[in-house]
Length: 277
Image (cartoon, rainbow, N blue to C red; front, side):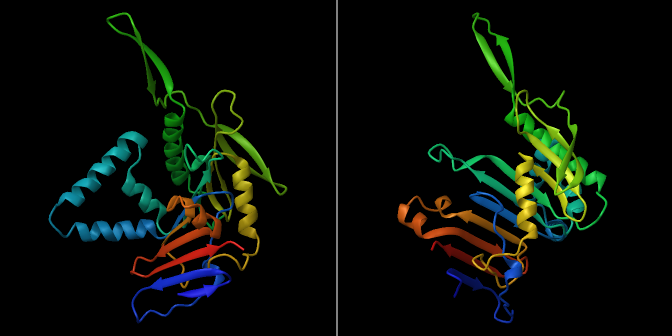
């Protein structure tokens, strides 16, 4: 364990691995998000995992994976293997916003998904996958009421996650003097909704509002403060979460800000607790 800039950091792994501590591995949510998840090389790891599973007899784990693939295909109209193959080694981050009324839920309506892509041109097929995924999520969060008349004369209202009729509309968005082509999907009377688009050399963006994308771009281009958690490696998987997710104790929440857990696919682990001033 080490104490770096008021951060308590611990590491675990093979003794033959050399750990180098650097700010380049640091990550912090770009807005008030009690949970953020980052991952890279997920597609490659999935392909290797499937290759290993294919060499052993069918067991309950492989059956569960096949069932999950089928559910994703039926609900999101997506082939999980094709999507992960397309993502490949791209770095992805998902941030879930906080809820002002934390008595009901810690998470609020704000969220942001970013796939880093340092190319000038977008992959239309990957954009199509993201749009299918977002359409299914929108249908769930905006169910349509269908009334049924029962035999005894009473009415039953069924809420259906219907995707038919949902239409993404072109949306020209300007950020720092540059105009980008996005698409929006919003319910009637909604100011925010779902926004999806591609920014050259930055990647693919899917969010509940354009302001969240603006904040993320501003944070991405700014120097990282020394108070962020520096890790001994660039992780393949990382969780950054508020202390309220693991403890309801007021004292714990008053002394800690964010907790980080990170891992690589070769077995290295690290963690960081950032303390409040």
